Length: 347
Image (cartoon, rainbow, N blue to C red; front, top):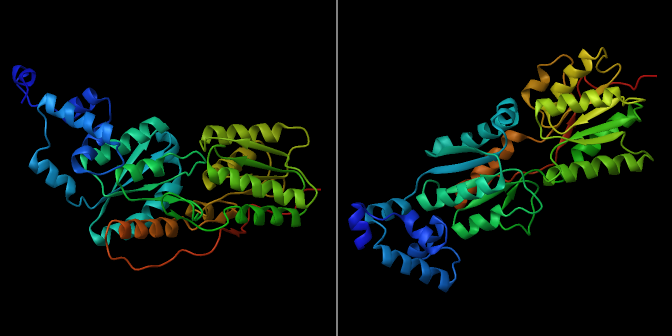
C-alpha cells in the first residue's frame, strides 16, 4: 500500500486508479482481466497508476466478477412518467421474464434519460460484474451502444429488424414498415384522403422506417400526408398533436399513431373535442397491446408481437451467455388488426 493510502488509513479504490490514469473503472477492470480492446499504452498507464497507488484487485472480488450473476440488464432511455404510462414495456418484460425465470435468471431494469448516462451505466455494470448481458431497445442510426458493449465484453442483443451488418445480433419482426403501409392501404380503401401521422422521436430507426413506409404508401396513391408530427411518446405530446390536427383547416379524417398508448390518448382527445370515432375521425395504433381491445371503440392497430419479440431476445441472449436454449426463430412481419376505431371517411 502506498504511503499516502496508509496515511489516509484506507485501501485505495479502483475509482482512484481510474482517476489517476484518466480512464473509466471498466477500463481498469479490463486491464487487469486482459479483456476489452485497450491499447498497450493505455493498459500500461493503468497498471502504473495502480502500482503507484498500491492497488490490486482482491481475490474474492475477482472471483465474483468471473462468476455468473444469472442476471440480464434492460436499460430503457425514457422519462419515468412515459415508461409508467406505456404498457409496451410491460408486454416486452413479460416476454423476457417468461424465458428467464424458468432458468433461474433475473432481469435488472434501469431507466436513464440520456446517452451519456446510459453509456456510463453499462461501464459501471461491467466493471462491477453485476450482469451477464444486456437487451438493448430503441435502435438509433448513430448507436454507439453495440460497440461499447462489445468493448466491455458484455453479450448483447438489440431489438429491431434483423440486420446482418450489425455489431450485435438484432431481434425483431422483418420489414418494420409493412404494418404501417397496410394501415394506410386500409384507410385509403375506406375513402380517406386526409391522413396524418403522429410519430415517435425522429432519431429512432423504427420512426424513420415507419414514416418512410407511411409516406411511400400515400405517394403510391398520388397523395401526401396531411401532416407528420414527431413526439416523445408522452401523453402530453400525443394530446397536443391531436388537438393541433383537429384544429387545422380541413382537418384530417384519419390519424395514425406510432404506438397504442398515444392512439388511446388520441381517441379520448377526439371525443372530448365533440367528434365521433370512427364516424368523424378514424384512429389507428401500433403494437396491438391488450388495452386496445378493452376500449370502446376497440382499437385498429398493427400487431408487432411484443411478447414474442421479448422472448426471442431473451433466448438469443441466454445462448450468448452460454446457456443451452432451444432455437425458436422469430419469423413474420407486423400485420394490421382491424377493429372498430376505423370506418368509412365522412362525406
